[in-house]
Length: 471
Ligand SMILES: [Ca+2]
Ligand SMILES: [Ca+2]
Image (cartoon, rainbow, N blue to C red; front, top):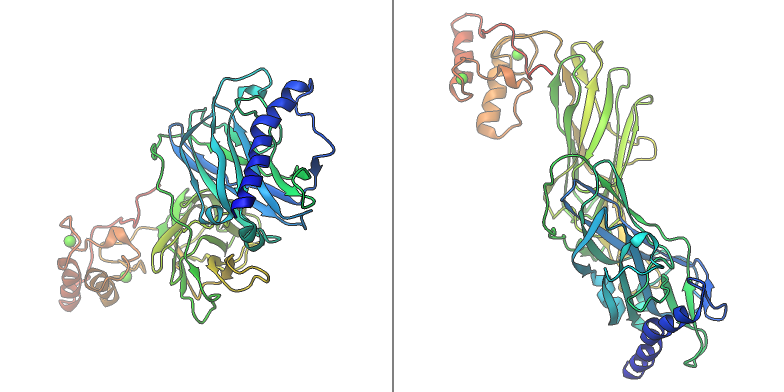
């Protein structure tokens, strides 16, 4: 380890900080490369997650390295550089290195924000982030296996641009220089032979930049957020038998023509999870999905209002989304009800919609050949799904009709009692729960319903009751 460390530091860091500067000063052309040392192999790439927030918000961007080909040789150096427009983003806080990164590297040559003087070669006056490090050979063999997507670090940005704009966290070669004004690329550095002088800098033009959407509204998270740790790694791949996963879609009462009715989607899992995918189908002639509000962080959303399908996917990170047994709010669907919808139930069903399935991403140790320590992510389907129907209320009812069947009877009293004393979900018709019209919902309401029924009187009163405020 020690002899390798000396050799690698001497070669790699010096080549970055001194050799690169020398090269840049000597060459007229910006980012002139040597055919002897630079190879565009495309056998690897860096990628960044997307984010969104309002002006003033602090958002997190995660950076990954994926090696998906057979590299020329085992890399011993890694160099990452990305730039951003300081009119839209401000880099804040310290980079947060992943567990995988800490296993992979043993010497931090350089890591930091690049906000120095903006020289003539700096495109668009961008600021940036740079990282140069050496890697441990054993860890490289274990972690940098083909196809594995390795989280490296998380960076934080304060949004300073304009609402409606998009800011890029741009991963591209030759965009930024260290203070030495050297030309800097995204590279893996390899020895092509055992000897010290023969190194190659492998490059790629497949990097995937991150996009930060600047949304309207007030800032709600203005401090560097506490980033959840990586999700737990289970020794065995979870299966339908061992994992208990529940997907739930909340119910709601809405009137024909109602717009933006919120339906909340939750997941509860016996295993910690770091990604999810859901698919729902619905009768497109009765209801449209206007928007999917992602409650965790931005992923991909798909809406098909012709075919009646909606899906969302967040599968870009190993960060924990849900703890064991935690009920996690994944998304809210805002739906528009057709003006022609009649009284009754509209069902959303958890099933494949387009290419969206219902799955959670759970990390485990089994399944990768050739890796001793790299966890993999398993896709586990929910054991149980629970979608409550969207109820359409086309005419008013009376107080006490809490199950909205346009009659007041013993089932209404029971539904109220179960909610008040057994922890059941609120009755369908919230607006009808205050049966005795005293401004409160409590034990007196089911009692009033039962007393009226027992006395042979028609229970309920207060004509013109809508379950929800008219929208
Ligand atoms: Ca009823
Ligand atoms: Ca009452």
